[in-house]
Image (cartoon, rainbow, N blue to C red; front, side):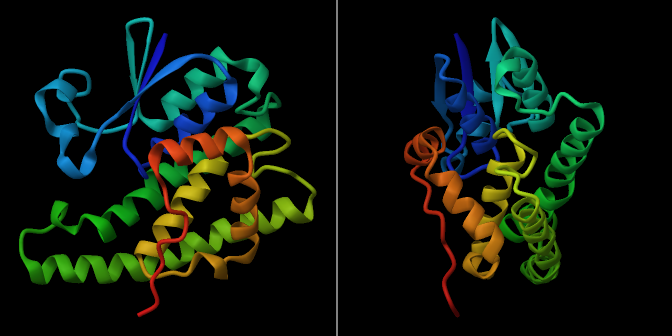
Length: 218
């Protein structure tokens, strides 16, 4: 049986929802990031980088979102997590990589500035700068949702639920921590409401005890 190590509210929500959507048995393993369980010896023995998500399948340890998504797409071809047509598949992977290597790290500078500076003054400046530059990320996600709605696509990547959907949900939610009201991204917020109505997304949300809108007006 596959095993998924996830942290509540983290980007591991992406493979968490994908696995739930397959209906196949797997073992979800909660890693309490706020208690730094990801830095403990037990988890580091699985992933020395101390990061979630981690997928373990038949003894193989797979790390990093893009690799895990690619693995799950090959393992569950009937789910169509990635489009079959080459260009469409490339575009989804292109967007997924941007979410993971650009949008995600930018938010890390907001939420964990201590990883990038050792003085409070420098951390404060890093956080301020990253918050300001998170707005274009949300704008790009909003544009994606608008295009999908205009073109009649039920999901951001096409006709099937895929990794772009839960990652967009995650990034929009994180925007609340950065001071952005998610309901102002009207197309994306509407798309997220459709996602959370899906039983498999709802199950992952419940397991992770995720609050969708964490924005608090100043």
